[in-house]
Length: 87
Image (tube, one colour):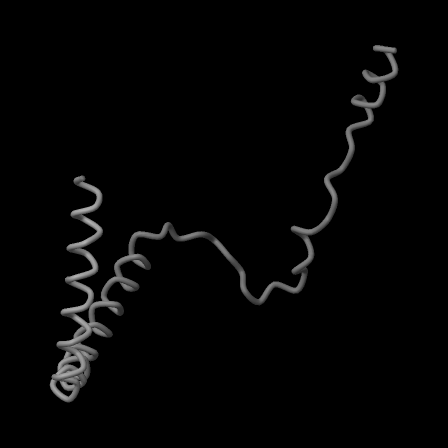
């Protein structure tokens, strides 16, 4: 019964919200326009704080050897020797 009531009141609230938007569309658009600036400012503040919290790494963006990370790891000659001893 509790689930049915939640679903019913959820549908009623959504319907009332849609009616309010239809009847007050101009005021609703003005409100969104008024909130857009502060939301962009807050998003910028959040991005700035995330940037402050990110640890600084020693990175050389203009390095000539950019493929050094993509190279395959060197194999240890002793590792092949150990594998042959196990068999």
